[in-house]
Structures are given as C-alpha cells and as structure tokens.
Amino acid sequence: MKKLELILINISGFDRPGVTSALTEILARNGARILDIGQADIHHYLSLGILIRTDDSASGEIMKEMLFKAYELNVKVRFTPITPEAYEEWVGRQGKGRWIITTLGRRITASHIALVSDVIAGQGLNIDAIQRLTGRTPLADDELPMSKACIEFSVRGNPRSRSQMQQRFMEIAADEELDISLQEDNVFRRCRRLVCFDMDSTLIGTECIDQLAERAGVGAEVSAITEQAMRGEIDFCESFRRRVSLLKGLDESVMREIAESLPITEGVERMMRVLKRTGYKTAILSGGFTYFGNYLKQKFGFDYVYANNLEIVDGKLTGRYLGDIVDGRRKAEMLRLIAQFENIDIQQTIAVGDGANDLPMLTTAGLGIAFHAKPRVKQTASQSISTIGIDGVLYFLGFKDSYMAEPERTVPGDLNPA
Image: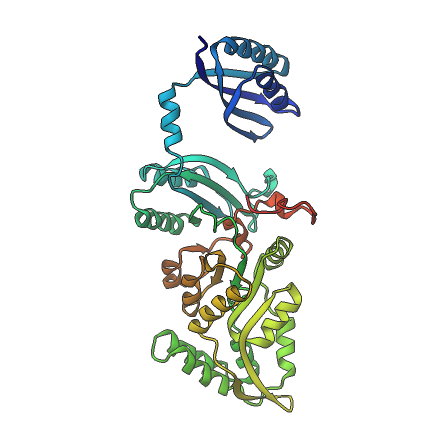
C-alpha cells in the first residue's frame, strides 16, 4: 500500500534562467503535487522553497533526480520531511490577520530593521516575507541627502494590542528619523482608487495666502490672525474671512506671478505620473485658493480641484470670496462626494494633508496620511510621512521603484501595487 509523504525542498545557490523550470519538471514527471512554493532572489542568489505531496514509491526517485540536477546547476538542495500534523497546523493558520508594515526613510539601517522586527515578534506575529520597494542603491549614492529607502514586511497573525504596536512604531519613528506604516492587508488596501490632497504645505512648500499678503504689504497682519487661529482664539472660517479682507486691492496679475514660482514639494511629479498611469483618480481639496489649485491641476493632471474662490472685479481682489469656505468639514464632505460620484467605496480612498483642518478628511478616508505634519495631526492620523517627499505615498500603496520606472504598457497589472 502506497504511503503519502510530505517533503519540503529547499534550493539555494547562484541564480540563473531555467533553474526553477528544470527542478519543477522533475516533480511533474514523477507526479508530485505542489502544496506551496516561494522564491526570492537577493543579489543573484536564489532561495527557492517547494512543499510537495507524493507517495513513498516516487519520493526516492524525486530526491535522486533533484540531487543530480542540483549538482549540474551548481545549486544546493535540502529535503525536510513534514508531518501531517505540522502541515494541518500550518493550514489552520490560514485566515489569520495579515498586516503590511512599511518602513520608509532616507536610509534604513540594520538597527531599524531590528527594532521593527522586535516589535513584530513581541506582538506574537510572524513575518512571512520581506521585500525592498526602493531601487538598488549604488555605493556612491548611499549618503546622498535626497536618497530614499523602503522595506516592506508582510506579517501574519493577530497582534496582542494593535494600539500598543502602533504607539511603539510611532516612538521608534520619532527617535530614528523613520516612517513606519501599519496597514491591515485586506482587499481595500490592494485596490485604492482615489487620492485627495491638501495643497498648501502639502503639494507646495508654502501657504498661498501668506504669499499674497506679502505682495499686498499686510504680511504681519495676516500672520497675527493665523497665530490667533492656531491658539484656538478664533476658528478657521473667521480667520479666513479676516485674512482675505486684507487682500483688498491686490492686482490679479500677482496671482499669476506667485503660481509660476510656487515651490513644488519633492516627489509630486513622480507621484502624479505613477498615479495617472495606474488609473487612480486624484483631487486637490484645499482651504487655499482655486486659482493656485487649477494651476497645479493643469501642470500635473489632477482630476478635481475644490478650494476657495477669491472675488475679482476689474482685475483687482475685492477682499471677499465666493461660495462656501472650504474648511475641514467641507474637505471631508467633498472626499465623500467624489468617491460617490466615481462609484468608489470610501475604504478605497486616501487623504494626504498636514494641518488640523485636514484631520476630518484624514479620518474619513480609508487611508489617512499626515505629510510633514504638525505633532497633533501625526498623533491622530493612522499613517504619516515625515522623512522623504510626497512620493512616499506610493510605497504605502505597495509600489516598487522597478514598476515606477517602467514605461507605459498595455498589459493589465504590470504597474499595479505588489
């Protein structure tokens, strides 16, 4: 009577085309059933694991042929018997929680990985896979100030305390100049479709109203009102009305001059190129001004712009605005409306911003990202980016540099997140 055997086969050595094909052909010829398979390549060094089910009459022949073939291919092969009990226990872990932990910074050190993996182990989770999302770094570029590095951990299990895990990651991030994202690896994480951005101090490195105020000669007065709002003495809408009123008489041409010299945040062009290529809808939801939002829309291809309209009469600002003020509440409303119009589930949305008036949309979106934000915003948002440019958003979505660098293709899925 034939006896079923479970064998884990581990192959390692210098990688070359045809290794996997040659070894799996032996399994196919001997009628083995593959129960699990995984392969990684690190600096041209192959690590391939195959779990097979076969009967005892074929297992000897499989191992003999694979040993000969491994010698011919100059790779090492190791066979480990697996008990049915161990296999069933492994199958039973299916359906447990899955998490994606993304570490992001100008550079990632062994110390960073040790700290993050220690938190993972302390929560009783198991690392299934680790991959580098950023491109290969030449030695000469390792210390460049604008370099970036991203490592993604795929983790399985249910954390003992998600809140404590998140808190510990925030502490490490603050101490180590590192960004750490913890996301549940569910269907929504893999199919985000709408990204909404704040504008001032997010897509651009300035506040447009400050630029206008300086040109109008009222910079100090506008700054004083802004400080009042930040201290909570007046709300956003009141501060907005008072600041806009000080712009009365400013020539419309000044707005064009400011728009053409806006300091664009690092990574905007790259991020927008990838998001557009892969079919994402994008929106600017800003407490700033529509004029500048439309300039960015034309320059980078955003799909929507919702901001505040300044009233202009005879080429001069009147000190008034048109329509409702776009405050934090309105931003969250517009995120929902765009998602509804595009037939996108709210869990498939992303919001990115830096200020307190961005918190409503950050907490409404399926993924809220505080970008180079104030401490209160970072503590409230589920994710944050503080170490690199805004294209860091792409790594939180699972994109790899190798995907982003490729030209447009017609094959579906080529540029989708991992």
